[in-house]
Length: 396
Image (cartoon, rainbow, N blue to C red; front, side, top):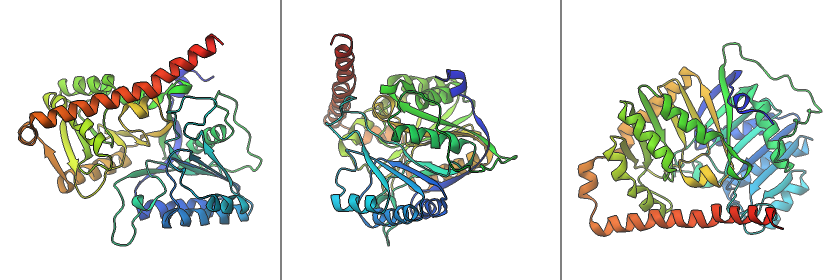
């Protein structure tokens, strides 16, 4: 198994572009699938059988018909509403399809483990890592704008690592094994003026906490400014304390959250943390136009992490997540400008005065109950079941 030093190393000679969610993302997704010659691995959390889902499926089936090896892996809980007719049509066209550990039916891991990452890689040479699911709400449909989200479009050496990871997950090779050699040799472009990228994964069951360590590193080494955009915010206490320590040494931390949550109970749990954040001089902004679903953090305008990882305990300890860490001042600057523009135009700032004015003892109690209930349920359905599993393994 690779040691930590090698896992933390950046891969050189890559090209990265930032893609905002909506039509831009789905057009590029189809372009990747349409351009594939030998293989496509597509793994995602939510796949809906709506206009967007059907259009992506058509592209996958066209690729399979022209003898591209297409592998579609979906989370068995979040995508459980797909009809059998839809799945059969994919399979009849030649798409290799399966669900990842269906909810309550896994024979290997406790029930909370979910495939939450969103990644596509074609021919081991081009791909995207994102926070974007396949559903109309993540797309621009008519006058309805997509939820705010991001993706990193990549070409170069890092795509080989993405391909190998997707292949191991598809084959259920959870322990490290040497990557399978591609039957069809692809010349992966190396960009001499390209940037350094590393693939980061969280899968607590498999003892992978790379993305959590990236966030600890960001708050430990930041010198000037950290821009954090995330949804479903209730991070591990260690990360909260790391944010507070960074702020105490003079780092400006701007935290962009959704002001219009799609999960109201979670929204209450987030709000419970506002008092702590404001007390530690962390700037809090709420995005107003629609739902914020993106997960991206920029450190000092020099490098960033982007992908499926939310700053919460589910991403840290339960779900299978993937991010890319990118050292590139150009795209880091683009992201910083995008986020700051969103803060200026589309957000309201939560100050100690506005928080106090909109909070009363009853609301504070509701925030407290929501936060602690989520933590209790999280413990029950992750740590508790994991410990029971380990105990049974040691005492059969």
